[in-house]
Structure formats: C-alpha cells, structure tokens
Image (cartoon, rainbow, N blue to C red; front, side, top):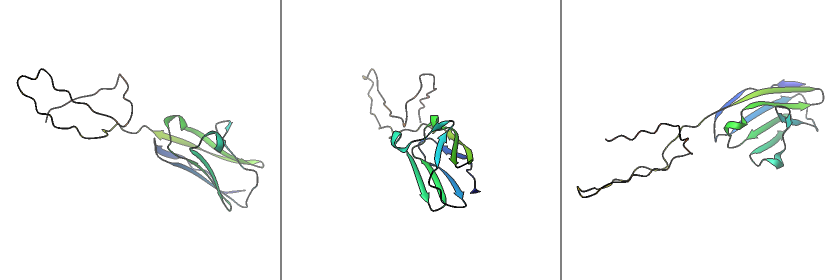
Length: 130
C-alpha cells in the first residue's frame, strides 16, 4: 500500500528531478517507468534508483527537455504516477566580452561570444552599444 504517492515535478533543464514514493513496507520487486517504457539504470547513467527502507526514489540527474513525461512506480498490483515538466534553461554568455580598441584605419572590429547552449538559427540575437 502507498503512504505517499509520487508528485509532479518541475525542473529547469540540467537540474536534478527526484520522484519519491513511500510504501507501508519494503518491497523486493519495484519497477520504474517513463510512460510504458521500463527504466534501467544501466542504460542511462543519469538515472538512479534509491531505496531507503520503505521510501523509493527515482533521480534523474541533468534533466533534458526530452525527459519530460509521465513517470510511474509499479509494485505487486499497485502503482503511482506523476508528471515531469522540464523548462528550457535561459541562454547565457559563458564569459564577458573583452574590450577592443579600434582606430579610424580599422576596417572592422570582431566581437565573439560563446553561449551556454547552441542557438537555433531562428533565435533573435541583438547586439547593443553601451
């Protein structure tokens, strides 16, 4: 019997998501699922199954957008499910722009940036001065 059911989780991508379920007694046969697909720790190093007595946890480290969905814990003839929502992390600069000194003879000045993640060609990028 379930004492505490799984609860919906919302995380930003690259954060850790933790689903927790508490049962009335320890069980030997517990299975975790994403949708109808059984999860396996050995197939994804980001996934961990933890048991602490009657408490069972599914941890998803470094959550990705594609991790969003319904997760279930199943045992005997009972189950609990909850939704994982993964929000897209904002794009940020990995380092500040360096000052450049240009003279009237310079035909061009090049500024380069590196972002925290890949920018889609359709994303709007705006350069400003001061």
